Image (cartoon, rainbow, N blue to C red; front, top):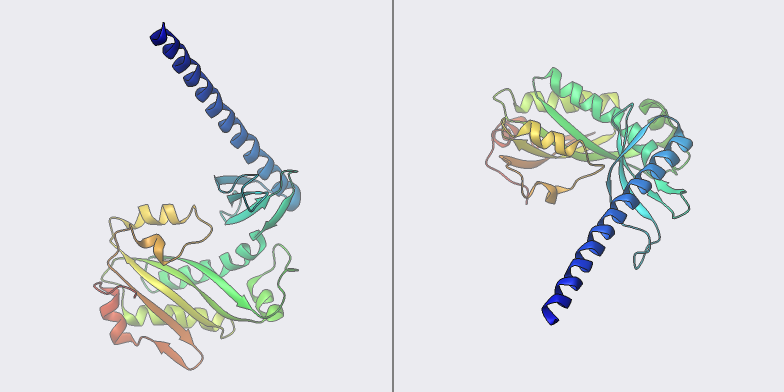
Length: 248
């Protein structure tokens, strides 16, 4: 009798768990569709939710957070939506501006024989909340006067990676962004792991140094081009680019 009752209870529990999981999946699907629809209504274009974070009714927040990709441009950004389906905040516009800088820097590096991908941020004392979608990078710089661009640069291992090449690429970018300081945490990735890491990085709106903790990296260092200095110098960069040194 007791064993039979236990079996029935277990079966009921399993069924309830399955139904609960189905409900969660449906909720996620509905949430994804609402976020994508709300962003399309706000900006036009097509959006794809890559990941969901905080859910409604958390202890401190009443929103759902998502990592989102703009399908037409591949720009990845963060967005928060209220239970009513309203986009509370997102950084899509700023990411579209910064993507222009990233493409510029990546292209300049490629011209020097370096295969790399960057993820950059901008810092300005001006209020940038009124930046319009589609604003060109040079117009943004002229109007909002950023004083620093900084971020992460992931470089594919190669004998072509020299201090002269890296410095030339950054110096050209520095000139093109109207002599604004550029700083980067540089990570050197083994040739056979580069594509895998870049594919993962391309699905994220931001990263930090800890993101590399479980990655196979050869070396990492800080590099900057400023008005009066380039650091480290080309000779030191030659050593750093070939591996063996990690950020503190």
